[in-house]
Image (tube, rainbow, N blue to C red):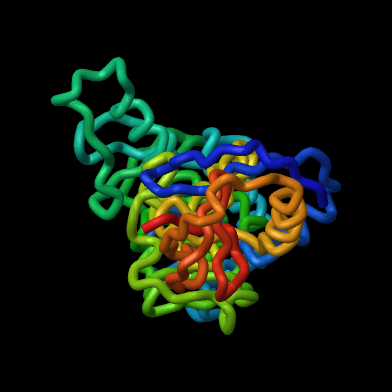
Length: 327
């Protein structure tokens, strides 16, 4: 891995960080550097969850089965499967928004429409998902109370159905499940995640014994795009420091040569190879401030050191990191 030093210190998010540029790097090497960052996905819907799998209808605990073994009943259940829905879900129903009494394909369609810049700011609003009461079957058009099976034509309006979240989805390949501790439905398979009570969120099991716990880590906005992470439908990455950020936002940060957490300024990946390269670069540069000493704080380990002043960067005596700031 090879780096070129720009020779400047740039201030980002109010924190000083060394600006480095990758002059050449292979993808496998980059993947290895950021291997400590793990992403996961969530559904922004919060219960009793019923899944139609094969000829039977069952909930997440394998209780309450609905007989669907007869061929005619099974055909009704499967009719129109994956043929209806919107950009957010494949489902065989639409919803009537309780807030404005209008019909939409899903809650996200409503929110995108009613929060558009074309809408007067005083009239913008989001759909209160738990207050949803009426759905409209996409096949027969019958409006009815929220349920999985249409009372008129008998079609299954969503293979995955969450009774509390009012969530319908025919695409069960997402492996939806409801986390009672989070209070919302998530995707990715229950067996692949665990709930961290301190962080207040479900994380991939690969992080179970290795992630840094941060109180309510998911219950805040992404520090880059400011979308509320707990209800975001986009992939989220957990940084080594424990803070969370959208995976796509983290990728954009790295594309702009920013490798420090926007919240605490700790390195978001293993930078040891970068510091070694920086050592070699600085060794070739003369320093006209040999008699000047400054105090620095390391953003990575928190140690305070007194070092020789340099125009380019200051190295932490404790952890050898250049991710430092002058104090």
